[in-house]
Image (cartoon, rainbow, N blue to C red):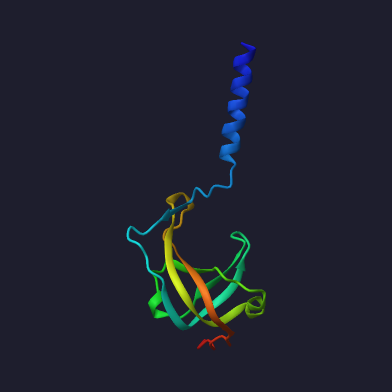
Length: 137
């Protein structure tokens, strides 16, 4: 009987540890069915910032018709070749580089939110600080 209790105790610990893992249960990645090809873009406008949860630098496109999504979706460009000197450009930027669509990160209904994020890989070729557009308001 004592052996069974020990096994049950270990099983409870494992189940508890799995339940507390870092796994993001409110997000599902949807990968494209077809092979994606990288493509070049120049003089795109975006916002450069460091994402603490992902522990990497990201550019969010701003006012770019090609990358416009629905109201509940967003787009993130994960920078693959981030250099220390680029960090000084944090904020509004104009950039050029090679993009590759990776996947769509859908938020699951348990979060109460709909939509998700289109995730692209970005190899920067050029980046410059940009003055933010003046708001008409």
